[in-house]
Length: 260
Image (cartoon, rainbow, N blue to C red; front, top):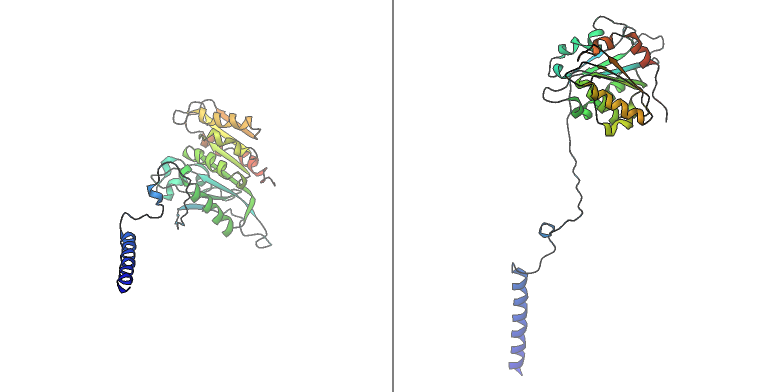
């Protein structure tokens, strides 16, 4: 009898030892490893990223800014101006050569708050969408800006930036003025409810007239409020005559952001 008991105990010990060996064996079965699956599977990704964005910019406040009898009650229209490729870098003096930053150097009664950011040297405006919209938010928060009268304009590379940012945030602008630029025709209809006045020189060899024409034609098909002024004898510089035209500013100020 004792012999039988000893045999049974030995068998149990052998079985338990075998289980432990199997558990430790590299050939033992493992939970499914997603890296070992072949074929196509649905997956998801999530990661929190902290990012710092920064820009130098010129800010113009009109002569009458802050002089209202009722402090804080007067809200001003805001114009964001996007310069061309030649003014990129970290020298803000370059921005004063063209467009609104040049005009406000002598016209202290220019009827807009003007913010003119400077694009990094190796970048271009369509790639700086996040920077531009956050800068705009910051200016609106800090100054007496009428959020229903925010306008966007730019020339050459800034014309591309104007089309791009306008399409990305059509609900933020009362009207836009892209000069000798272009954009994505696929996105043009996002500006259906934003008044657009585009300008281009017929003899522009740097940015072909077709760039503006294609955006305007597409927007017209969508039922947009858009017009294009073509200067028959102008080359790439279609901005000087545009920004020197008082009718441009009257046109801008005739629009407020449409209430939805």
